[in-house]
Picture 1 (cartoon, each protein chain N blue to C red):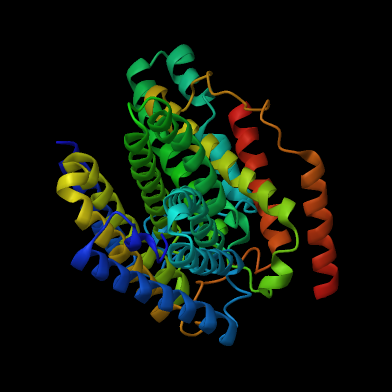
Picture 2 (cartoon, rainbow over the protein chains, first blue to last red):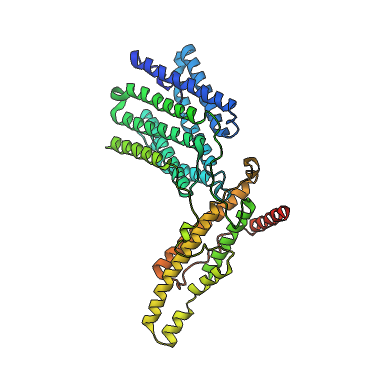
Length: 266
Length: 176
């Protein structure tokens, strides 16, 4: 998920230029998101997300420099950056998971728990086998990227379902983060699956265009959603029993558990 | 074939996202208890007494063993089973309302106690597991089944309970 993916040196001619142009758009958008984050003071609200944007922005800059100054080293640098980025993208999920239940003390960490559990289970039983038991290096990398994308999509879907279940209103910023990331994941999953099926000869050129297209669309949504800091959404009515204090909620949770345990013990 | 599966996953995922990002209908706590009269509260003694009566098998035993009315005892048990399920569902709904209680403290101060957040999440998950299990057992075996475990082996963390109580008392004192 970085601006320079469209600039793989194996490409020639028109497709390469289109890929480069889209990648440059993504690079500029990343800069705009970063600038607006600092100007609009969203930076403090979403620290993990902006650290990811800084990573992507700096990474793309370095990759462009390598591409123009040291073309021989570009291929190695590209794959290294690509693999690290697949893992770093999880930061966006962690940020989203931290934000969605922020106002509910009882389940403030539910989002992070969902993210960690699903990522660990899928990582162990679904993503890792693709790396270990694939026939070749290229197939292994493609399989790893594809399965990591599916894992992220599952995490995001689970977070959305949990958000819906508890009736948490997201607000423009967080909803935009989720929508943008889901666009990217949807396009990426279909793109990687197609690349795996049709191979480099048939799908190679399209792949190097579709990847930056997905990322650029994602960044466009993020730019619009994070243009300014949204107000705190309406979080519903306060419970008449506990008021709004986290400690009072904690005490009530304990009481509920004690009463139910007593009942089951009989 | 695999391409079709992944394409379907991508499309289904996108549809799901769009659907779920629609603004949810505001939750009205009274809706869950509209048919039952009043919202159950854990501090409500009468409501807890009701559970004692629902889950008490002595009436049914008395009908079956002493008065020798097995059919009547069975009917009573069926009725109590329905009541037990309703009671547990109401308890769950009441708990969900508690979980949905927002904290109006500034975000910076409300995030200071990270350990407390994980403890509360554990209490929430624990309750959900217990009540789901209780509902399953009541639905399958009825309200008088003896195989409902106490789950006492699942630690409730008395230390955290004490700290929550102390913190709540402190909050109560400062607010008065």
